[in-house]
Image (cartoon, rainbow, N blue to C red; front, side, top):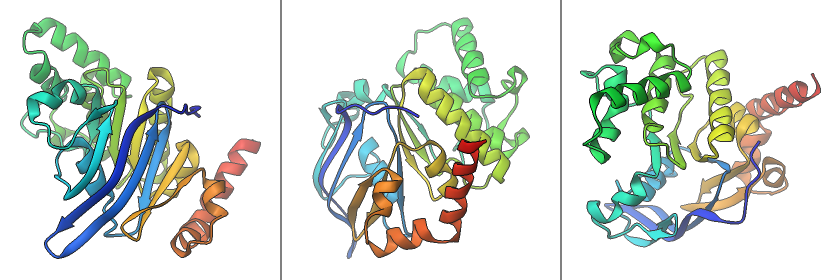
Length: 265
């Protein structure tokens, strides 16, 4: 598992998100350290995806400050933020592939956006490399998303997220909908990619197996903010009711036991 440094890749300060009369976040602070895999958890309605969308610029907060790679993100137009955005990759829920494009063409989308002068031969080579890197067979390149299984679609989404050799990876519920074997294999893929490429990973999940298997730290959203952040043992030492219910419940105990047994094997 990655060893975090003290350098923060993402800094969120006093974030407030409001939808109509509903305040989702208020006075939310968060730091994401370089080279760590940070898991983000919270109950339904706590705004996990809203937080990610705020960081990447798809949601305009009512208040607060957000910086990525030391660059302020709020209030910047598309062109001003472009140099920062090309340094990250995103896997949205369900992979969000373009259905009318092949896997290879999906991978090439960000390359065409940021490097439109790259010739097609090099584009094809890059796409082929990223597809294999994601754990897909090379012959997946000419297939359309409708021809792929759920797990293969997520891997294709990872291939696209890695297209520009990012330093930072955003993953929104990456193992949702996968069977336990497929989810474990995907966790292993993320862990291997993070180690090989030195990625910083911001990972939204509800999967306790994922949290125990690959996350360096976990941030807990509750009460409209990050109520705690730390390793799982550090979180277990807290008396917050949601944290105790989540990590000490049957699924939490099963995940902890599985990790312990794997370590002893």
